[in-house]
Length: 220
Length: 220
Image (tube, rainbow over all chains, first blue to last red):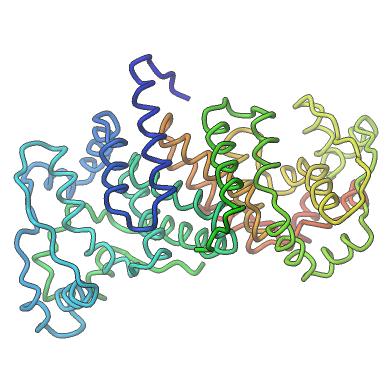
């Protein structure tokens, strides 16, 4: 265990406070998620994530060029053939009443990390085949923990979901643990998804995209 | 999510309190573990566990006959051939300075569940190959969650360990998640360990015991 310095005591208390808040919140409480994200995303762990992502040429290039998904025309993508990434993404967004993430100004590597992950989050859902119910979300959280290496945020979401399970829903243990295991194994065998330029792949069949990234649903 | 009744609010607060206490404790704080166990082991979830275990003939027989490991002569087992379960168990206990669990009186199924799990805990360590460091413990916690189906206690230990990881040790995410995954897969493919009469197996080679229970280390 790392030894906390006195100045970390305040941080430790803040993390525990925001963790408790999200445990006591209903699932999908955006304010609680945002507070947790802000509290646990300290520069040290973000540096670890960035250093890890940059070990792969794709991540390195992404941080150098800071390319973004940019504006997405869902109606246009929705006209694409049904087997394409573009159509599957558009259908997912439209059917779930979601809007593409609005692009923010990027001034540094931390902002790029945050914006790139947020604007591609629904694409990760599509490509990994994780749906948006709790089981899909927890599978994707586990996938993120593997692919980002040192993410306090995504790991905190798993810890939060397991804590809620202990208190409210113990009979779902098997479903949750299966999802964590599936997400973990899938992420470890897959290519890194961080830095993929999805907007070059709208017309590519989803199956081909998955194959190129070695996304395989484990037999769990 | 189950709807909590008003009388459950007190229970919910107690669980959160004991969870926080163990998050803030040093690893292996026996008092915090005991408090957590007492708080989360409500009759409803224990009934679910017992009902689940009794679906297998071995578990059913164990609850009917309530057999125990009983007194164990470690010095005698330590003289057995080195490949036997008896020797491996005795060596583990002696080398770690552990004493066999003292048998308690059994008056009901809940006490049997608790005593049987506690007195066989170190045997589960040996048979699953999980050592007693944090990685071995978390792998075994995951194994218990799978094999006991609805255990708030073992799942709370995993949630606690992930929460501590978020705050203190984020760089160990991969090791911990690998251990959770290994324990989970191993437990799902293994025969149930609950109700095994280990004291009939002291002279059996450990490899044979593992084989008979289909204990296979997953390639994670």
